[in-house]
Length: 453
Ligand SMILES: Cc1cc2nc3c(=O)[nH]c(=O)nc-3n(C[C@H](O)[C@H](O)[C@H](O)COP(=O)(O)OP(=O)(O)OC[C@H]3O[C@@H](n4cnc5c(N)ncnc54)[C@H](O)[C@@H]3O)c2cc1C
Image (cartoon, rainbow, N blue to C red; front, top):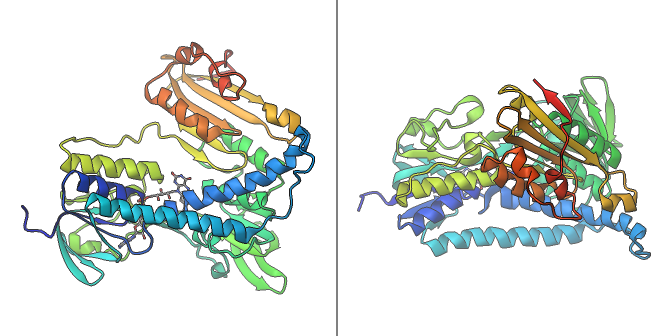
């Protein structure tokens, strides 16, 4: 047995850290893990989970609006009661956070409710206690960025949405990434007048161009005002509310401003110099495919490495690392073909390469369809679905699938399996659809919409 207090010490009890600690402990390692704020981390407490509950709340209102067209005479949309939603959401978050803590105890790991920082490369200060470990994992996640502009303190960051006691009536959401769009969408659905302000012409930088354009149209159709090409320069408190000014001379007065302008890795406060670890650009910890830092016994995973900031990526990395170190099963988590979704109303989802990425690798056949789903032909809600397959012409492999429309996230998980398995367009063609669904369109796209390259 080693002379260290622990075989493995994990800093951070979020998605990646808890998975790594739990699996390492079940492999028989003596594991310690420190969490300074909330077990379960960002995803459970101020990210995926509470956000999705709020999106679902917003969807009920929209379904109630549509229900009349299906004959439900008395199901009209009433006023939304925010405190009821807040209480139900917070109770669920508390339940899940407690489960995360229990999972660690059940696996035999020692949990510390404390901040951890390096004293040297094998020693940590954990809430004032000196702890040594043979191996250390940094899984400290990230935090929302507040822009450096006058009056920035008047705005909120994403965490603050979950502390609001009531729905702000007029909201400016600053940013064009997925978190900004999701927040704009859910607040709009719950009844706020939402204005979205972002720098580019289209939202969702990095996503497929057709999805970006369709998303802009979808948010327009919901009545969300989008100020494109605007950078917010200042916030100011006035008698009427918060005055938001932009580079292009726009001034809007709202009740609340939410900045969703990016996130930074949590590396400050770790005293990384003591372990001779040098963070890279914007504070991210550089690692190789095995999650190893420049110190062979110190690893980093999840958002603190700023590679692909998604919960399933952090957990996959944590699990692979624990299996490698203690489970006699050396493996890495692949970051190729990671599916992802944007939980707007309607949602978008994607896996593999965008058309813009794929064309760099060779000529493409693009299959694309736009249609009004059956539900909305009845409800008359102006909501279109777009589905797109990006196919490498030479190999006929489907290298990317993209969708905006109801249930996009649920569908894309299955499509991702096909793409990870290397399915060709012919494999899609010989798959029989489920009728009547929107999903069947993915296997009935027969004619090439355009050839590129
Ligand atoms: C609003 C929002 C919505 C999101 N929606 C989605 C989504 O729909 N799907 C998805 O896949 N991802 C989503 N994400 C991203 C997802 O939450 C993160 O990718 C994921 O939580 C990363 O896990 P992690 O373990 O790397 O870090 P985290 O979950 O952030 O955990 C890190 C933990 O470390 C703790 N910590 C930090 N420093 C120390 C220290 N020195 N000592 C002790 N503890 C410390 C922190 O308190 C935190 O609990 C969302 C994020 C946000 C902000």
